[in-house]
Image (cartoon, rainbow, N blue to C red; front, top):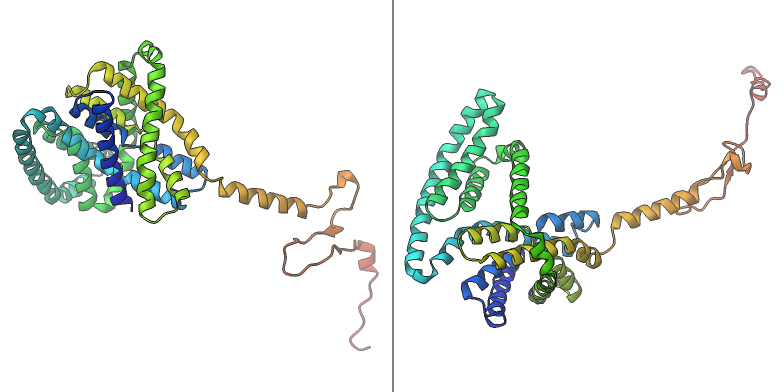
Length: 363
C-alpha cells in the first residue's frame, strides 16, 4: 500500500495540479508539472512528531502515513534528477538521450564505489583518527554530488545514490556515519533555510497574503480529494482514509528544495517562486493544527488518566487530616480478583512484646 499508493498519490496529484494550472491559471505545462511536483510532497518530520505526541505511530493512520512519506522521501532524488530534463523539454529526444547517458555513467561510478568502499572504510577505521571518520563520508557525499552535477543530472541525486550504496555495502557502519555527520547535516539544513529566508520578501508576502491563504487551502483540498479515494481503494474504511489523507494534505519542506532547484534552472519566474515558497510555508505552519484535529487522542494520556484515578482511589487519608494513624489502614485495589474490605493492622508496642512468655518445650 505504501509503495504503490505513495507512487500513485504523487502521480495523480502532479497531474491534477498540471491540469489545474494549465486550464484555470493559464500557466505553461512545464511550470504546472513542476508546481505539482512541489505540491505532492509532505513533511515526514512534522507528521512523525505529531504521531509520537498522540501515540499513534502504530495505528492504521500512522502506519499508512509514514509508509507514504518514506516513498515520497525516496522519490525526491529522482525528482531532482529529472528537473534538468524539463529545461530541455523543447528538444525532448536530446534530453532523454543525455539523461540515459548520464545515468549509465552514474551507474558505473556507483558500481566502482560499491567495490572500493569497504577497503577505504577499513583503512579509515584502522587509522583511529576521528577527523578521518568524519571527513571521509562527507567527501564521498560531495564527490558523488559533484560528479552527477557535472553530468547535468543533479547534485542531490548523486549524494542520495552514494548514501544508498554505502548502506548496501556497509550496513554495520552506516548508522555510525550518520551520527558523525548529524551536526554537519543540521548546519547545512540551517544554511539552506537561511538562504530561503533571504530570498523571500516580507512585503511581497504581506501584499499577497490572501493569495497565499487561498493557494494553501486549494493545495490542501486537492491533496485531500486525491489521497482519500486512493487509500479507500486499498480496502481501508472512509474514516481511516480521510484521516490519512488529511495528515498528508500539507506541503512539505522538500517543496523548498524543489522550488529552489527549479528557480536556478529557470523553470519558475521570481513571483511564481515566491508564491510557491510562501504557500509551502503557510501549509507547513498549519499542518500541526490539521493533524491535531484528525488524529485520535493520545493513548498514553488516557492510560495515565485511568492510572491516576485508580491511584487516587487507593490513597488513604493523610495524618494532617486527623482521620487515621500511620499504618492503621491499608486499602487494596478495587479491581483485584477478590473483593476485600479494609484490613485493620494493630499497633504493637515494645512493652507488649517483652511481656510475652514463650512456653517451655518440656511443658
